[in-house]
Length: 375
Image 1 (cartoon, rainbow, N blue to C red):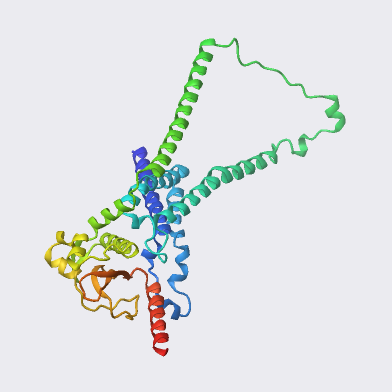
Image 2: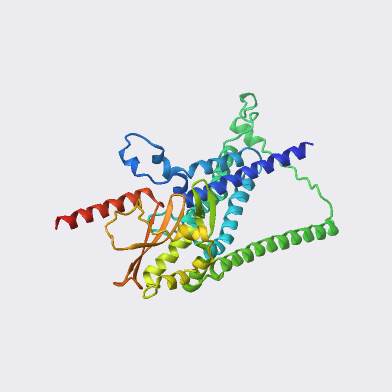
């Protein structure tokens, strides 16, 4: 019964440590998801929760420490949780990068570092914990024990009642009686011991070999997992960008869809993929024919819209495609030729990813418009 309770407690500590390790990786990867940037903080005096944003990772680290220190096998709980999460994250990394890249690397320069940055910081913490728990703490404990042993002495030796003078010590030198406790060696027992030690050495070698092979396999998986090229990534994003969901605000795109839509729109703007196409041809290129009619109407809405990130100074451009998910929005604008029969230029705009970046860009647009009107 006691053994069962001990096993249950160990399992509970391990689960808590795993949650702490997952939380640590999440905080290091996506801090803006926990505390989104806000321009209003600049006007708040005194301490705010944003002042502790750079230290949020300490909380899950403390949870891991508490879980490992709450009983026996401290290092087992710590490293099983820490290394297990690291291994899972490394094996998931190339798959996510190929299928959901917005989780792995930032779409915009003003976003947090995503999983690629989180893994770097997490790996540094893993190396530090190995040095601390496997090298520094055992060395300090061993030195402390040796110092205690060096300073220890039997109390009877120090008792003045048993003290001897130098002459007494010289007159009666201590004689050590040699006692042999063993007879002739048992050869069968020796052979059995040698076999056991060889088996232990073989199992240890197999363990080290397994760890080495698994490490090599992990590295090969991370670096050699096939990644889509530019054309394949565009095809993937075009297949995802029209995913939708029903929300209290109405029909909207999913978070994954708006990321994919922005990447498609950015590619269109950079490569001028719609240049020279008529509106029906552009809609066909964008595969709008596979979108349900009610959602397609929202996507193709051309009415004026005010974005949090822009100041409307280009009245000549037309809103051609709009994908939004909550506060996040990606908009493709086009400029038509003189007779409105073909698209000349495509431009992409975004808003809602970072309130601070939106405010700065909007202010820049307002300043640019003010300077233009003064000339």
